[in-house]
Image (tube, rainbow over all chains, first blue to last red):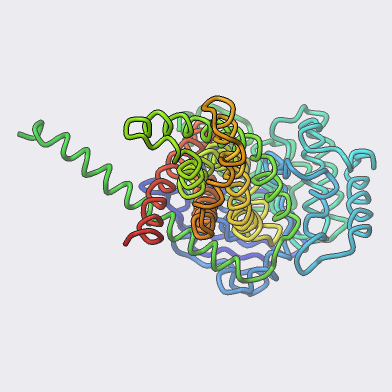
Length: 248
Length: 261
């Protein structure tokens, strides 16, 4: 269970998070929705320790994220970044097997390559892709490689940051299906941030809406369409009029 | 009145900003040194950086040294002619190259080539979230990106300086023998006789210091790059300017330490 209590984060005068309280049960897929610039990515980065919250506590299975042994803590996570964040200087297989080639999870090179190729196959990429460099791949392929890297070390918790941004609808559908399958198959806890409603419906067990620095609404995906919350209704139907200002 | 003091305020602000930047770079350098001594180590990244910084900088450092050595021979010959001291060309070329021009010009050429490339590469990694990705993959960016480059530059630049010194002296020899009419054997004899071990070693120490400066500034500005292409561009420019100024300042300090009194 991931628990966030009273998370505040400001960048200079810009108060991005103003007291976020959220719980993500183990094995569930939580999708966080919200407009651009509302702090969704900052929230994920706070959990990973990439950004330090000004106040508030974050615990993972009761373990405080601030005081936990850093390497062991991070070894529980996998993350798919919005742009893939693949290392340009490394071939695809070394990107996927990055964690398996160094540090506490280090394996022999041949074994790491084998695992990388297996993970690439799992996300629908041929073994020939393994020796290409990220610059030689299309945007959709880069996302898949990013996904393969996120699951390579079989983490307990996986974060997906805008997994379908910049992809055509068919490729977005493929990535959504892959995420759903992988999360179910691995029994992992997942947190996804997106404003793509088709992703929300495909991936989520639960949904939380972040607005004005707080969780405006949270509930099971089944209740999202029927909730009376005006913020959620405006967001999921993409209306210009409502409590959320169109110009931010 | 306030208009009158505006230029002074500008100078003050710039001076404070420069000292603050030097302070931040020094703290960054301290952190790099502390990580240098603690595992994990990344030998493959070190070897790659060594090749990039050392081997691939050889042509530019070599050409710079060759032309500098030649020009130095011409200058000393024409300047020395004023007081009938043309014969000092071989010794002054050798001492000038190994003590000053070899390390300083080599350092500046490496600053232009390497500090910019390190800052641009790490800056791009930062804006494309590759540095964040490293952290999530349990890899410390300081250990994986900075330490191998700093170590490689600190070891590679003295080697470049040694090669540059030799090529520079050879440039002086070519001009001395072919253009100024020196006897080849005498030229080499004069060079050998006047050059002391410490002249060479002090230049190599300078090279190590300049290599350290180049890699630290490149990594520092890359890691602190702003957003987007403009941010990376600014970081690259700042890295080259800072590395060049710090090299020249450090050169003066080291010359004071090595040769004063």
